[in-house]
Length: 241
Image (tube, rainbow, N blue to C red):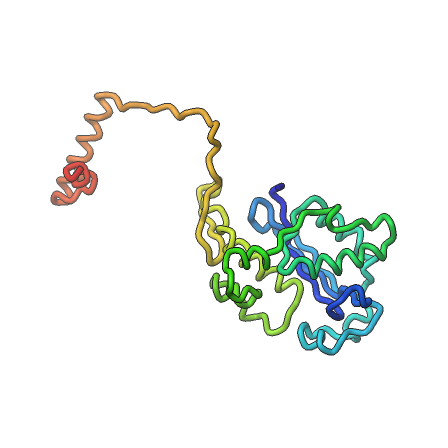
């Protein structure tokens, strides 16, 4: 897998692309080596059809709001360029991928499919594997991994992608804790893991201190012990060893 991932969510006019329902919002955030790069793709789309009342209750997006928004075909080239070659990270991926494939199909034979453009990680399936028999919707995972979703009064593709980014990083081990500049960065709500060492790496050389260096070290410890009234931790450790 490449180091580039796209955490993605959509909002739609209804539940079934086969019934002619369309995408009305796409929100996507880029991760590079498990760190947000700052790159994002966010568009509201005119679906050229009415939105189901039940869907409006979920996301709050209305027909009037979308009347002047671009069509999917208008943003398709930019969207495809943004996701191409990445791994898509989606919660309940079959739903979003089904809608995306339906939109790509409307572009004609050159539209392709998501499977031809990307690989896909379904975080719902991942959560079910890690937490069998438990609720694994996004709100439940936020509670489990202590991810703040207090702004999620209604569903929104970009907000849900941001929340899913935190959940995914926590669920899969957090971000790397050590950076090249010596600062630290932790993943939200999860444990931290460093990448495994290469088993074929060459052995590190072991350098022994010289007699002069050992004498200087012992002299320094003695001075520390004196000014600390016998509380030099290093000497205490050596005595207990």
